[in-house]
Image 1 (cartoon, helix red, strand yellow):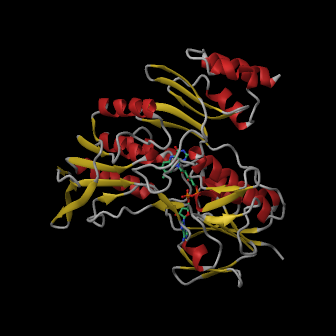
Image 2 (spheres, rainbow, N blue to C red):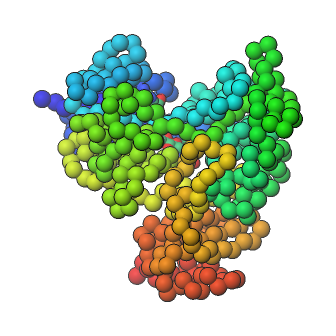
Image 3 (cartoon, rainbow, N blue to C red):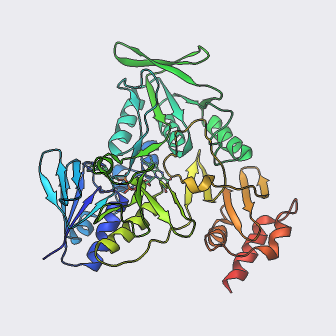
Length: 434
Ligand SMILES: Cc1cc2nc3c(=O)[nH]c(=O)nc-3n(C[C@H](O)[C@H](O)[C@H](O)COP(=O)(O)OP(=O)(O)OC[C@H]3O[C@@H](n4cnc5c(N)ncnc54)[C@H](O)[C@@H]3O)c2cc1C
């Protein structure tokens, strides 16, 4: 009988799984279910769409013909129930799909903020393309906007709003931006750039209430009694994996859906990948959450291979993000920080719990204006790195940290104040290649 594969979610994990299944099983019946009318597009690209740097059409990584060539049955709808014993999924329109193998690739959604007034219509989040379009639309008519939250998304929203709206306030509970990943110097670089871009940063500021007038946002009131008038509030306090289907189906859940190194969940023939999954890493024994495009892609591909009958363990890549914060390119690799983060509930988008696994480690650092290099130096290997602006050392560091290369020959020199860190790294990476 032709195997029936059902994939819930048309994000990068779902589509990577479909590609891998098709590669390994040319005849299998693959159904992809998604409640997003826009299908598969780049979520990291939404930040550039928000600022107007790219048009909507550029968000789509695959042409229609390429998707068509995969021979998928695409169903638009919302899955509302999973019955793992019957191997059956029910959609919101009461239709049912029977599967031999199922992938849960339903991603994560913006966490709610427990602030009175958060239900007002101009309180927005940034999960998907419709959210981005709505943000642009609201920003064009807004006199002032307030952004609350931390991590990459809050900043991307603030910059996106600034492109359309004259006055943007960014509220931080603590003294500085993204304190669980960036150090004080790095935060200061980002905050100075934000301020130079005209964004008003309010540190040590907590929102007590979002105030409405005739059913619309009129401003916020802070816990110390200040009022900031605005007609739009964006919340980015973290994301929550969409685990409801798995929970009601009796699968094992921690923060995400627990999956083994074959991406298999506690239910037979049910796999999980991407932002929704919390995948066991046999190397470390840990199961950490990542909300990274490349991780979702590689997990989706691994799940697809295993759904199609291969038995290949998933090798977790080193969590890495090359992103842009306030116009500054920044690469984050490996363990660079620690919890907690006053502005976040759990992790944000483009983030990894692995970045906050830092043990006590000496730091090698270098800074020339906005060019910043910070290395966390372990006894024999590098544990992590943050590279800001000048990215010359980025690739070498990705290799040295990802491959856990022995750095003992340069360790002492790296930790000598004033050391030419970038040059030492480049030389050592080149030597390690030979
Ligand atoms: C604004 C933004 C910026 C980001 N920046 C970065 C970055 O800089 N670097 C980086 O690496 N990553 C970044 N990310 C994160 C990255 O995009 C995600 O890690 C990745 O998209 C996860 O892929 P996924 O397939 O697991 O989930 P998603 O892409 O979220 O896809 C899940 C899909 O499932 C569908 N779905 C959910 N529930 C159901 C249901 N019940 N029934 C049917 N369909 C359902 C959803 O509609 C969606 O189509 C960013 C994300 C956003 C939103």
